[in-house]
Amino acid sequence: MDGSSYYIPAAAMGVALAVKAPALSRSWRDPLLRAVCALLALAGLVFFFAAPPTIGRVNALTGITNVSAPLVYCLLSAFSASCLVLVVNWRGGPPDETRRTTRRIIAGYGIVIVALITLFTLGSAPVERLVDFDTYYARTPYMREMIVLYLAALTVAGVAMDFMCGRWALQVRGWLRAGLLIIVTGYLFNLAYLTTKFTAVIARWNGHNLDYLSSDTAPVLASAGAQISAVGFFLPLACQRIGDSWNTWSTYRRLGPLWRELRPVSAHADRGVRISWWSPAELRVTQRESDIHDGMLGLYPYFDSEVRSRAHATALAAGSDPARAQAEADAAMVAVAVRARAADPEGRVISAAGAETAAATPPEGPRDLVRMSIALRHSPVVAAAREPAGTRPGSDFHDRTR
Image 1 (cartoon, rainbow, N blue to C red):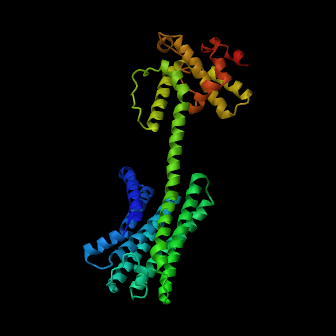
Image 2: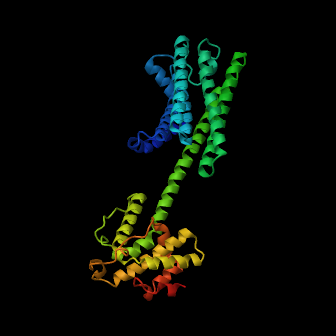
Image 3: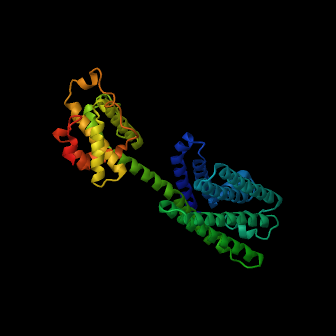
């Protein structure tokens, strides 16, 4: 019997787990990452052990007829618990409350798993059934209770997932909302799967034969639901990662004008640590920010607070908001200081005894390096500061920018 429809999703889950494994080894204490990896592992195991060829092989290896049935039911219950745990940790909230809810879910489905094993042990299933165990043993004592229990446990998880994800989707926007709605759709397929299973089992109780619903229709719905839900789980995470990478590279690119402005006067310009082209974007941004700070450190003796104050007033008068005006003022002061440093190749200002300490003191408050970099390229205030008369600290910059 062909099991490719089971093995292909199992392999896909295995590949995804292998991709996540290095991150898990580095951040084992991250509950969200642990929940993601547990979900991937259990989903892969469910597909693998639910495949008819695997069912027959497991039965043969253990020597216990139909032992694959409680094995698959237990894996399905554990998978349902992992989905609930993932959503609880993903949604966040007070850590103590999240941990309590997680423990309750694990304990509840742990009890279900123990009950499934107990019921199978108490019952009798002597005839091996690879695809129609649920309907064949629907009226067998203990087997009947085991089947109802696992279907009920999956139904509770499915309803809870749709309720939690649907309610959460109303409170968020963007990719997260899209992912949650996809999960809701996937679990609607799972509920359809459970409906067909229940229908076939109940039909057997009443002397009818609707086994095709359980043997043929239900597996298709389960596979579709699992794969749709997997897309919903990973779409927001993947898009968030792509968005974070895009923002990081954008920051790196926008810092370029300021970095290039300061590089000629940086004392470490030729001795900086070189990073490889494949280095993470975060490391590149950190390196560029470090270079910028090193460059400004060497310019402190040339900074003129009067230049900054006048540029700030001019920017505000031109309609800039306070944050932008501050960045334009800082950028103008840097541009003037760079010109002054270039005009002092011997560094007399730096080495002269009794240099004004105020000029060597950075302006109060943190600087927005990205805004400063943008201002260097686009601000008319900074363009005016670059004119020759603005290259000396204390020059008549105000007259040129009025």
